[in-house]
Length: 584
Ligand code: C2O
Image 1 (cartoon, rainbow, N blue to C red):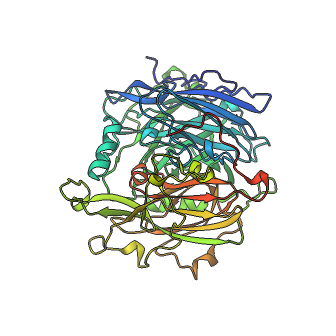
Image 2: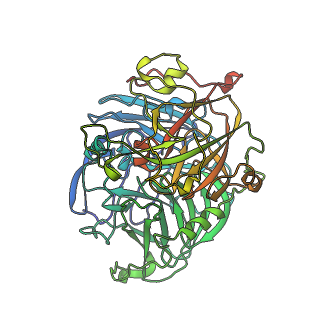
Image 3: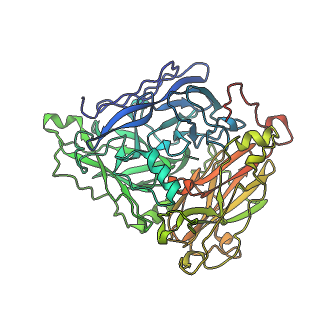
């Protein structure tokens, strides 16, 4: 095996996917003349070994992580996904707006039935007014643990900062590795209501690095030239943890988050929640044979057991000569914040501001039509009689928004049933998602043992007229424990107009909102024991999933969905479903 080398092959491509190599790595992109790109991806099992454990891993085209998809802003993208496994699957283009193409979004039973064994579905969508780094991942059960990859959008207009050429762009994707089989783990979680096992390692581009047992051979080695600037395309595809990232003795300039430009700022480290992405500029201003650890480690916000390990790769300078080799005694990275460093995380998120320039204006809604305040909670449910429950106090874990634990339908997707007016009695949903918490109290201070934590189950949806300006206040609670929840919204970007600690105060807090240059994104880390207020214009007809991007919380029901109705003009309506749209 070649040390740390892996490469990607996507069949039938017009635009090629990334070619990752330790030397002269990066993305190669052949720009199509027609503004079209199509590719075909096969979901299949592959034997993969990490930490001396070999297991069958679900992959796309046998690659782990999966192929990089790189397109140009404005392209019409077609990806034919063929399911070569016995289970069903779907792929989600995380952060792609999917304007009028909600049936290409991917979340199972929200916008489509999963693709059955042996079947294919071609996702077709256009990418407009987005540029930068996103990701794609499976959106069915826990498959995204290994089925994920980078989704890169090259801008039509010049970058608003001096950007290196395409061959100096380096995708860096964080993930998690479990030695055990995830299907059985998920089954047990659902059966006994306990928490998932923590992962055995974090990975950078699928490689855990030398701090894990039997892992030195699986270390990312990234070679750079001195005196240049590289563009790092960073993606947190981990399942359960916010991660800090830093490169020892190097500074990073943040220029874009979730495929929207920000006011550039320089930092020694970043924090990314699962589902968040960012583009960084990395000046390589050393000239030495030293190697520099590239590290990712969790930002701990929960009292639950978690994987407290650190993934490491190495940055080496190719002018270091043959003396440049990995020295495992130099693994320290002073730039990497401590796992408990809440202050760093808070300050980092407050530095993020939309670029808000004449070419790239910040379109935050100044007025709102509706404000929805929702708690985000973990819950404990009493154990049904004659069963075994493995959650805290012998109960079952669930999670909820406004005390509703979201249940996905199983015989038709909500999108299809709404747009085709199919009444399916076994899978009812109702348009009555509560717009306020059922009762108010000191949310972040609750004593779990004194409160009734049982939640309600259902498929309650918020319905919005086309074009509505919506504000959602996401309020963390202290049920079980306060925690940073990365809330992700499909089909829309939103603006994080405010955040704070404690209870949101509807009289006072809106006065302090940033309505000038708030960060625009698709996933927000709601402060632990606090709240975040986000605004969006509901201008994309369809059904859109909203959920915590910590996978166990989605499993437990920390989710909801909203429907944006078709607008009055034909250009404001959902485009027709395609022939190959999967049925359940
Ligand atoms: Cu990346 Cu619904 O998720």
